[in-house]
Length: 271
Image (cartoon, rainbow, N blue to C red; front, top):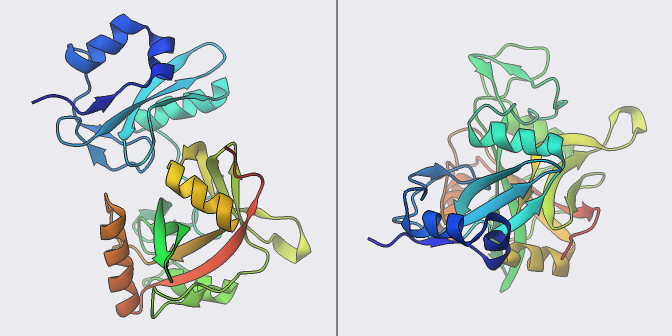
């Protein structure tokens, strides 16, 4: 079966025709992989797959992604970010920030450390596509200062101003003081108000900037706002397609397990 692998002209120019051909038809072609964008599994024999080349000051790393997540491209990063990309690809990357926490001090929860998984997608509301981020922890979130049991993820967000969702066809309400940091067309962080009137701090932060699809970027360029949906662990799961993601959001809302907010961009949406 032919491999559904895309090597863009830009990537081919960097790695050379010989290496590109080995990827497409030779022994260097990837087997199964974890998408460098959404972190869910992919297989170039069954899934349209993009080659993504991360280029630092001295080294370069080739990664793979679902074509629906990122087109094949060259991504310039600092050498420090590149080492983070290597760790991410090999599964040794540090975890993102926990809910409401500092990225260097993830919130401790019963049974281990909970971190936030984040998925980008487009949500259709009143005939218009809106850029959205869906957030789900990897484990129950305990209220700071407690050890559980229980999951206080949604109550904590509601206290911050997120609104329970009963109908995903309704546009979420704006949330003051929060924003999404998108720079050079890549997702860097979700920011929340700092303590005692201080500057914004990261609620969630990418250890390497996350690329988004052209459609997502076009939508955010138009609306200048991002919809944030959040649900407790196990409510959404890893959904490979936007229609399945919407179905999961609908089910979470029907079960009373979904909150949301709309927030503006901080930074520039990029090209």
